Length: 365
Figure 1 (cartoon, rainbow, N blue to C red):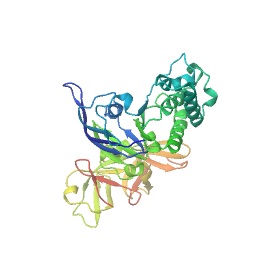
Figure 2 (figure 1 turned 90 degrees about the vertical axis):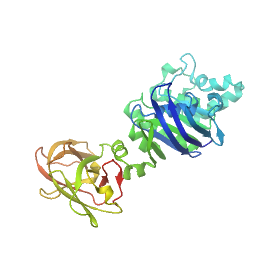
Figure 3 (figure 1 turned 45 degrees about the vertical axis):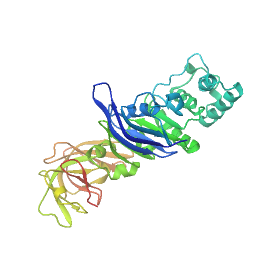
Figure 4 (figure 1 turned 180 degrees about the horizontal axis):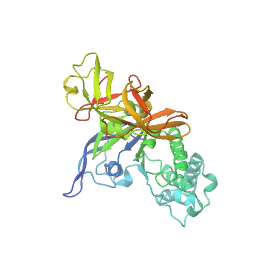
């Protein structure tokens, strides 16, 4: 096992655009860290640079204490699991898993021992004699992971490995990957654009956007204290509600924020500076942190659509002077909500966030 240090990592293709821009990141030995972001943000490119499959244009990559920029991929001690299973169709599961060890010159007994141990960890011992065509998607992905385990790598690299699976299998495989990390305690780097996978798998999450790191932190840190509008809007389902607003009057111990024509909200000022509160602001409130109040209380709004999910009810409302509709997530099944009903909206105490005109979070707690 080994930790990684990335210092000033940059990637540019020939004279084309810069796809990674001065990335600095420390990954602890034995950590499960997730790279997340929209398509094209550079997360898979960075993973391939760590694996040695892409050249580093500038900067330094340390694997443990060793500078790895010029170390060949086969000597880095990294095992990569791709979105495509890439199994040899003419080989059995056991032969697929042990193929790299066979090429490395290990004896049949050594290969069998490593394959049997990996199969036991992944609970696929009963599948070792089958060919890939006789396996389900989830079983094939386990074999691909087993092929990586037998190599005993310093670092596991996962590039959207669950993208080809259906929703039920993805949930099951997320659980299996978490258990696998707890058992192996190896360093694992996992790339995904799915924020649910990021929140459930990662000990820490790295949010990428446009080739840059927006924020690094634990799932709850990023969810509850996003650094900017991008992070706030990327994590969470339904997404965080954003309401344009302005400061109403001189700030005291509380912020009086005018939201369109719908009314005012009072929030704690915290340590927010006067400069940060100048100009156009944005209120951010997650759907589960909004509550209905009697009409005339809080912000003036009316119901537009109601979704009943069984364990929760999501109501979409229109607020006077706000272009986008807002989502309100209510626990359980809520009946009696009708389209067009007038309602008041208030935030759960201490749960609303404020962002300045540049999209940075303003400390209000």
